Length: 429
Ligand SMILES: Cc1cc2nc3c(=O)[nH]c(=O)nc-3n(C[C@H](O)[C@H](O)[C@H](O)COP(=O)(O)OP(=O)(O)OC[C@H]3O[C@@H](n4cnc5c(N)ncnc54)[C@H](O)[C@@H]3O)c2cc1C
Image 1 (tube, helix red, strand yellow):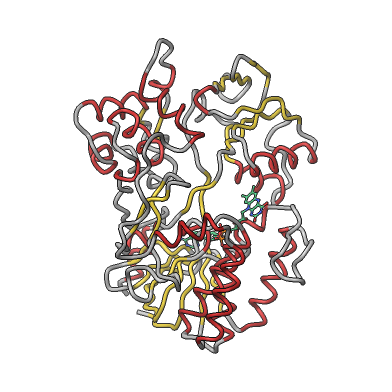
Image 2: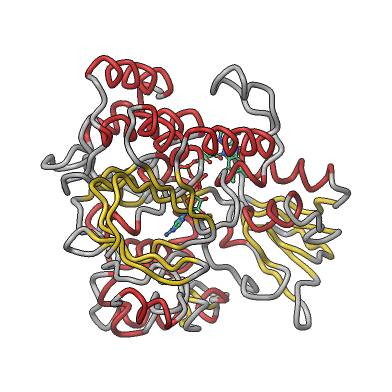
């Protein structure tokens, strides 16, 4: 097994900031990212950056990613691109599938900066070719220079949806429909999207983009069985962390959107603090990074992180509802109603398990996400539940009245991503 100093998983803004900060202190640092280039979400965004640091100010996000890459290269950090960290085991070792083979790594400290995934809630026709998430659409537009469609419907509201709609129009697509609530959307067509309707409007369309927002991806930290707590703001569970962003597992830090950071500035500031703390920087340096992080956070976010410390009870339970935008989806999915279209829709597209089948499992007694998974196979497929566990939690909540805070995330097991079988053999060698 290889041994090393600090390993940072994820080379987005948080991971890069962590790696640069740890390298500044003189520690040996390796950054691992599954993508072939560093920058995380910055790589496929063109909006100008504001307020990070002077050299990055005003640069389109994708150019800022290149500048950050240059900083990494100059800092002596070793960057392992195109490599997936797919398992974090009880002994603290990390399993990696790299382009030239698989290996196991024992690090002194680990910073998980794995970012977020796009939130998806099923609607009629969402598995048709031509339906994609905001991130996929941004990648097509800005990395591959391909229009996802000429007539596009955008599902969701908020800043990401607005940025996406504007980027699509700038690239020459027509945004034919905007709808906030996925439960109201029906996409249809012969073998691919040809039409979309929502709220009484019906349009010809060749693409539908789901832009409901992002949800944290702390899967590796959850595999390591860290304590977690519920975030009312996000409607999901997050790793609990100390003031230095260390989890209940000593030496394991989580930073950036993986831990619920709200935006780029907070992700960057969290990364820097986690990197310095992991590298054992001086109290002065750490205090300066903590002050910068406090400035990057709103008072509400600061209060949220203060409530979510290891050993605490986590955030207070939500009294009612599920968090505004998805309440109606949860009710529609649980309730049936006269036109029960959602019952026939795949909730887990990997295993082709419908909303109706999950509803039935709940009616027959399933009370947890793990239980639904065992009874239906929902969440067992290629995406390992990334895209369906939120829908399962909402359905459980709406059908049984269980507070979302009490619906624990699915038990995370390696591998986090599909990996070549050879990687399994190689890690034992
Ligand atoms: C459409 C859109 C609009 C946005 N608009 C704004 C805005 O206006 N203002 C703003 O402040 N922010 C905005 N953001 C958000 C901002 O980009 C993020 O806050 C920031 O990128 C989060 O940084 P991060 O490092 O935590 O995560 P990411 O940037 O997501 O980086 C995580 C990295 O981890 C890698 N990774 C994940 N899992 C593994 C694994 N198992 N093994 C190896 N690598 C892994 C991923 O490949 C990725 O490169 C926007 C994002 C999007 C998508």
